[in-house]
Picture 1 (cartoon, rainbow, N blue to C red):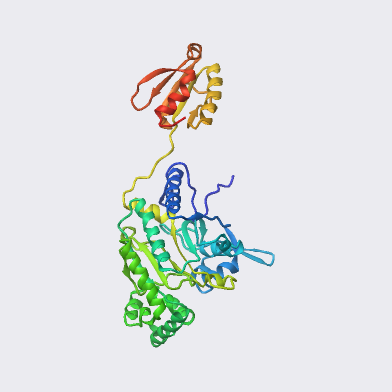
Picture 2: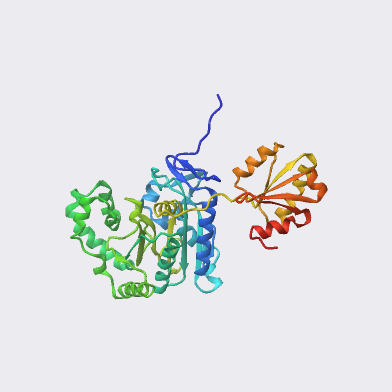
Length: 435
């Protein structure tokens, strides 16, 4: 018996039509193309340029960039060993973008580098609704700017993308983690507070207490959250420079009319963040409410080998979660691309003419369908209906002799004869195409 192959658990095919994978609806390729094109357009408005990095990166790049003690590195990476080399399917794109910035000396282009990306990422986590082992991420990075305006613009851009798709029931949370010295001092204060309560912590948090106690602030355990209510506040440890930067970010957000709430427990899940952190969430998504998030990571470049820090800030978001939010908000997505015209050929001579004419019309920008199976007129008309063609062009030997074809508007049912030499112009005019 022949083996039946299927997609790997936690992955899915994106088909021309909407499909289902493990009980979850997957939009068709027209919806993905539409959303990606709108994201690209908004990035262009904000003066960002696209960058595309490899899916495969050195394991050490991700470990040093994201943090060796993070869940991503310790539990969720797909690692490929080849000889003495170790590679990883990228679990995120910020570290690869910074690697590309350094490797190709993009600072020499002059000015601030504003880069965005759209593409697949991989994490070996347990699949669930909206979370997959292969998922699709979009995001952007500003490299070379330490001004608070860069932070506010980044947040504004993130929100603009969701508003573009009709997602307005959102909440923006912000925080400041301060600089390296601030975090070091706060880390020790938090550890001192939690150490006497170590037995009350979960196993995961006890490990984090030794390695990176700031990660405990992100806990979802109710007992730990009650315990943290009396913990020292990171905001109280910000030095004068960090406090000024954080205050400026908030003022610029106010200038842009961006509402936010301060969340002293917002630390995000990656070690490279410092100073501003932020997250956009929506209650429409239920318990897994996060839509997008990011922050400032001024020290990441030095972690990846740069001699000097590179001030930088960015955000990342999942395409799958964007689709879930659009569905929750009742946003209609575009369906399949329908032909401007579908040719119905009657007889061999007509079929040959149609084959040539369809190619000519495609070369002038029209979307044209035709029968490739030699079926009857009735079957061809059924195919035109299935493809939801705007018009059907009926061609037989009589039409070719008269030099005219019958063009039927499938919405109104009206039909008229069009001269062969006028067909391209007629179809372009009636479908909104321009010559």
